[in-house]
Image (cartoon, rainbow, N blue to C red; front, side, top):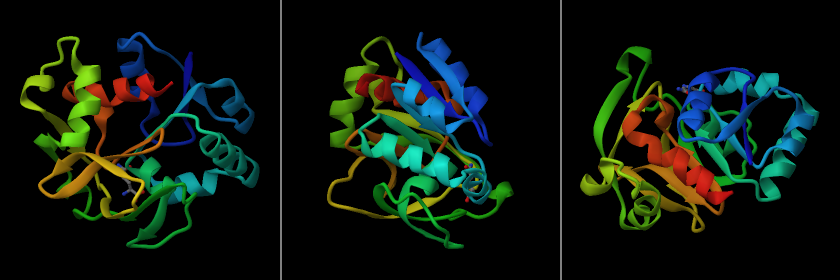
Length: 204
Ligand code: GLN
């Protein structure tokens, strides 16, 4: 089993490190044809407008086909923006494969980035996350996880097929639709959010 990490731009290296820690094989995906050789995909954070520009028509079509074909995906921050149905602030085109709307840079600029130590698992999140957190992960007891938010988007709408797994107050920050996981924060930056990558691996 190999997890591909989209490596056109952004913080792909830390995702690779996290997968390595979890004993999972990974490969950096820089060409469309590599999508045929992976069993799961991570779409990392970065800058979504830049990412969109770097995706040529062929790459975009291959991504769409792979995700519609049911490959498990973890999309974070800019990666999440790429997958969302509706994007505002400013608006831009997207792959529209995840039935949520997002507002970009919703918490302000780079200097307004923050860490929240206590994101709460919802009851739906609990049943998914407890399964993968059994092996001694600290957050299984508190049912919280840490979230690093960097010029993060805010999810402003979730469609009927979307389940919220983790919340910040009343706002969804980790959602799931079929085999697509979407996080507005950066789980690769928190030891305490390892369960997110584990959940991805579990979908394979
Ligand atoms: N603000 C970025 C965007 O709109 C996303 C930031 C991130 O991925 N950390 O694309």
